[in-house]
Image (cartoon, rainbow, N blue to C red; front, top):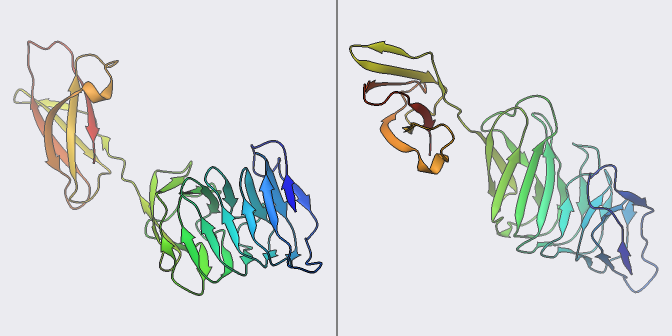
Length: 260
């Protein structure tokens, strides 16, 4: 059988629900066509392949798919349909093709999860969104894929979206764990002048990490064209301090701090 839905967009408002698909004999299968979102509810007992060839597929909280699932390049798999912390199950293999996307949500205390997997072949992009108004915790780990065997391959990129800070994520295909890392955002303190130097200090960097001070005489100059004025190391608390000579020949300068 095949299915299609119209309207890629908001993952909640554009999803159309369907009753569970049953095995009527012969195993059956499902091919997801079209650019819309397909939502499967309940216990789907057909045992043939579910192929997401376009658009996206999601499964309701606590729902199951009995057969193998494959997500083609350009298509997407949704980690939840509106209920974080209530996982669904794929009681078979999951194959994520290069060029596909997996969209999941987390909060500081809960996360989307796909259970029941025998094996997973990873590929494509993993996009994780913080669905809460609270900041994520650096070092926090989330079990996104619960499989009986170690996965193969890996995601080509991991993106963490959050309105409460900047984060990166690393994914371990052997155990299905995502690890969150907070990205330090250094800030300048008010500057001062001492002994002919512009004293620039700040906080919020990565402990013992490197940084560069960039400068330009025109704030509208693209950042890639700003000149490196000085480099240094944050201290163990993420603080920094630089003394930059004041040049009377340069009437106006702008500064930015850059971290790797």
